Image 1 (cartoon, rainbow, N blue to C red):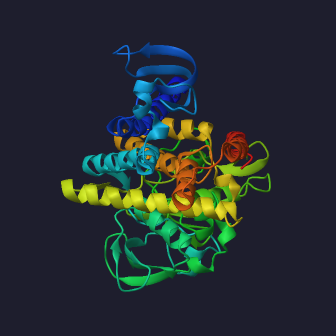
Image 2: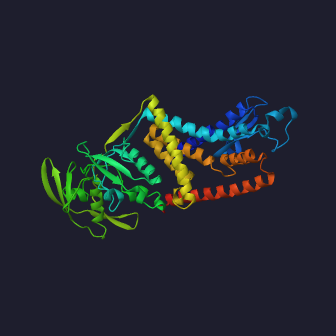
Image 3: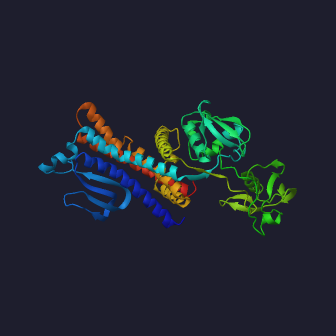
Length: 459
């Protein structure tokens, strides 16, 4: 993915989400009879301007694309002609002002439903829910999960079971169980669908402050299962010199049975950690025959300071993929459920970060968003639609937070007005706005710091 493509994907993402959010405010304001002076995408110097009617709304695109706004006629912001006073925002009933404010976040949530629906109809290729080897001492290992286990369904109470359509689906259900402090019971078979057994992930035992970017690693659900069948063997390198050939199925290494390509990678890397190449005893199956080979990897530096073994061999087959696709009505239902679950997850995660039960490293900024935009665009339309939906949900939920500079803050003002019968005073409005700006600046600074730390490999 070239930098220019990543930038274009990022700008497209911001443009769509900002336009939809501000259009929500604009459309409801017009419906309530409020005069909209300007509809702006971005801030700062105006790059493009259009005003269809002399007395109508001015539509502009500005140089800094990190947001937007809808400016409405309001007596608190300047003089209003007598004939236009009934079209001023501040003159409208409380319920109309509230509807105009909430329309922006609601538009983002509705956009997420639409995007998830299209993704469900188009379909997306995801890894089959066949597990790779669980991490040592992880929840998955303690639950008895093994490489090659196919997760067919899951349940939090042992009564109602939900089909697991893919490995991505399983990870989402694990996250849900973790956030709700609920154990997750799994129904398993082998990779070919034979046999049946159950296992329980003890998610409730995880400390709540364990919620961070390395969560799945501690739970032990790594990548999808990949058969330990060697792919390309680079000529003249350590693997070829040791007698390995493409198509060899690795049965064991130093007497340890091998069930997944990840175990081949792990054993190979471990052999070079002392800095000296350590020969390994491999048993492979080739053309129906079993062969014993002495395999000696080369020693290389990884990440500049860690020595590992390397064979220059493609270690396994590509994980089996499944197409996850829904019908027209079912896709909408699934999309609405996904939007609701993602919204609830976002709120809970923000709450846990606020009280210290989740790492602040989870807070991301524009650099991470740009990176994910580029990656999802490279993977294809379905992945990019899903990415847009996730960011749209995040934007909708974030704007509903009760911070003075956000839509949720304005709703809190209106709640105060509804309860007391009088609006918040100008003095307190000013104080609250200043406090809200300070909080937002701190959040943006932390998000940018996390972005840079990830970019530099510090997280």
